[in-house]
Length: 462
Image (cartoon, rainbow, N blue to C red; front, top):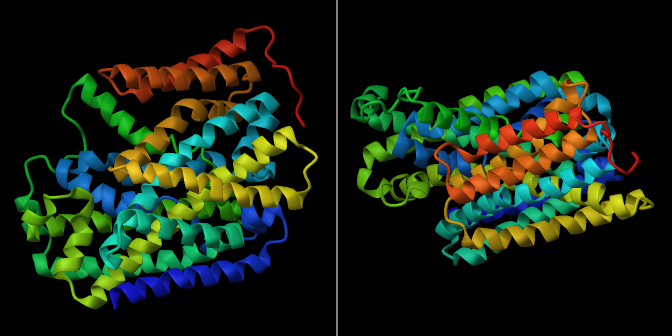
């Protein structure tokens, strides 16, 4: 019965994607839903951007192992990111009337910067997509009993199909349905477990010392690691195409800002539910939850909950993963078509560009499937993705909007220096977080560009 319910739910998503495909008449319709999303759809789509496997499977495992300090990155850093997007970026982006995040680099800096930013942003999504496919494969393996590889392929097939059909319209409508499923399912299970545990007091009393501590022990290393946890997603996911698409898909700049604030609040509150559920599971069944951290909640639900609660939970989990995966696949595909293929073939018609973006969705998914087959930590795969964009793209983005003297030379140096320094620090395993070195190098590169007399690279804006 559980397997049948999940299969029916997957088919429902395909049906929504097929229906939504009737709304796609142009690249703007496909990538940005024609810029027509009302507040409800825009907020649910933005919330669902990241509320996926790491929120329901990865974060609870880190929470049980390390306490509150282990989940600063997600959900707190993720909620911070959405709040900052609403405060500093959403309205400015919306008013530019562009299709992709990398179009900003072309308009602000020039064509060379556009190409480099596109080359950098696409790989940053591979780990993210792989994390979602891995999680979806694990879930389907539990429910269907198939091999992990078969389940990863099935999940990839479903997501790719409804994304190719309806693009952002499919994603937005399915995200709304999935958000309702997520909140309803997690809330009901949290209430049931609250009653079984007997309230918050037993959990607090059973927790190790400093488990709920929000600040680290005083030391430079601890403070820098704490800062890195906040900004990995808090700043690193701001320069991302999936966030940009949500901002640009709203009906107006005002709705875009409101939707981002609302999604930040939703993320922070709803993301606390799986943490609570995981902690309850660890309290009630400690022997089982110590085995595989990522499987704390799914194993508990399968072994100790009745069928209706199993359907609710796995429906919510599948919803969360599907919504995140579809947006993660769509984002680099749009950049690949608009900012790389079209860069070299500017004569492309809108119909040809739309076809290329759809082909790119398949191409990117295939790469992510291979990564998912070799990955083992959902939480770490997501962290890699955000750190990549933080050290290479955040400074040029923020400086381009708020630092008038920035230029293309500084932008290029900033992107390359930040990435190279970060990679080098990861290789040598620096004492302090590598992404902090990369971020400082990126800022230094932007500053150097300002003092170079010839502050423009060869190439004109198209």
